[in-house]
Image (cartoon, rainbow, N blue to C red; front, side, top):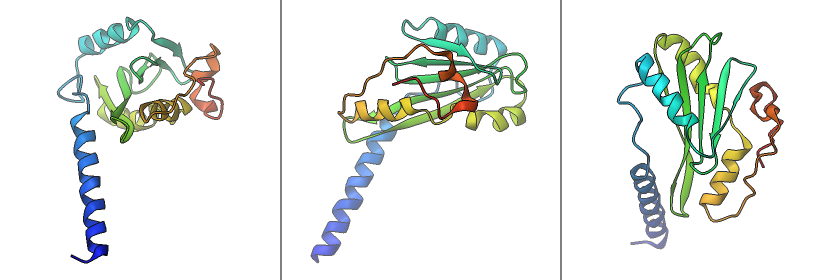
Length: 164
């Protein structure tokens, strides 16, 4: 085998191994389908609020944005006034040791699938905390304290991120 083909084969095999390990470490979905009952939604909201380190704040876009450093997870629940209500979007850090890490996004809705799909994919946002969690999973030591300012949850001010 020529040296270049051997190197290409090693890179391909390494990539496949990382992909398989990353998929194997994905947490199972909370529900079997994106469409859930109102009781499921209410129970999920209560479970998230009961997480010991979770911090939840209302946003100016009719959402309850919840974050847990311990679980490296985010949940965004719609509240009255949000056209996708009741619905929830979630993101959790998934890693395979110190090889690969990324955010796994999921979502669930009760009534209106069209409104959910219009809202859900952008609900989590791209927060600086995700980068810090990824760095921590890959062996760096970021500071994961929250400054306590409610504007950290204002998705319209994404450049302001007080998690850090």
